[in-house]
Image (tube, rainbow, N blue to C red; front, side, top):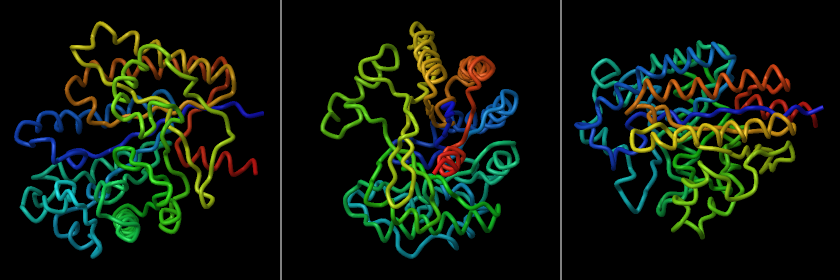
Length: 325
């Protein structure tokens, strides 16, 4: 009998997540805190038996700038908005020589910690934080990007990337077959609710924020009747773990109660619940965010004991369903 499960995926980016928006001169403490928080999150995952996928930007795998350039594909994305072309950070010497003098654009030591922690999957967030729905780029450039990510991951860590998260959730079904050819078996897709649809983009952020407090649509849990494209599993996200901030302190417990209610519903009804966030979301309030993350994980352990509700990574979810075919 299917017991459902608790899935966690993290979008590991550091400064590559939005360098066109983030001035590194004023964000260094934020990313320093992010780096310090990663081992603490891993420690909590180990303590509570959490299986998770760390979808990691390929640039972060490089040992130094020389290797980053060596593994960069010849076919780079040609965005109409050149601000999204993060290769220019290398060309403009924003990127340093290695992790020691530039811990914001390189992270091989953190990736090794992730890979060495039990039940953690290192997945792909593309090589260059690639935007699959931006005008100008094409599927050939995307394919070259994923190939570069696989090659660098294998060269430095002997890891084959099997799970993919599209940067900024720019899910593009037309690119799934290309992802499969690059070794991807499961892709995180967006929740199947109206406020994740493109046509509602003008009010979607407000609706998503409200939904973190009170339900405004159908349940975001799901069963095992999931979609595939070219035999690649489309694994829906359920809930973004909205970070603690001082201005949201008064509603923090409402956010926690909302997540717990969804987890309980999934556990009781043999359904799946997929929580995700970015490690850098903890950067402004590490202590508080680790506290609330542990609250969620403690609750998971209660559900695990009571309902035999398991934890799984994205690739484990794929393999679990493949075993039922």
